[in-house]
Length: 119
Image 1: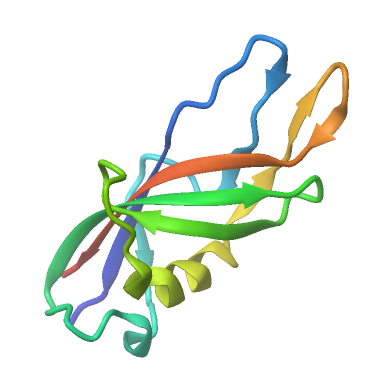
Image 2: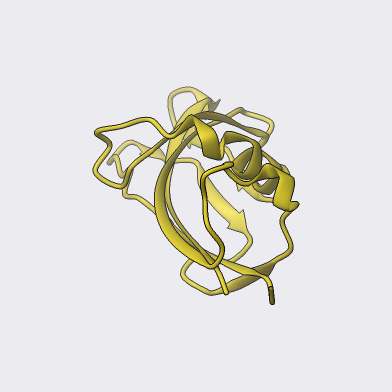
């Protein structure tokens, strides 16, 4: 077992009158080496593996994010078995909160496509 990589791709959330929440670290669209706790992986997942997930986060005005849910890439099915792993990763990520001219900092949902590969 050599480890895992994760690639993050924030999904569009544009609006003309506000700046949406955004991921500031780690860098999006780059392979990032991670060393997840194997105990956090779903029980039925066989190593090596690769999987793409749609992760929905709520980014607070403080920049802290919390997991809303994890879905298949098309959003048709929830994947709760990945919650412990994704929550452990989100704790290490950094976010910038949403803002608007009218309201200042705002709570915002941020959707991220997450590609995980254990190699």
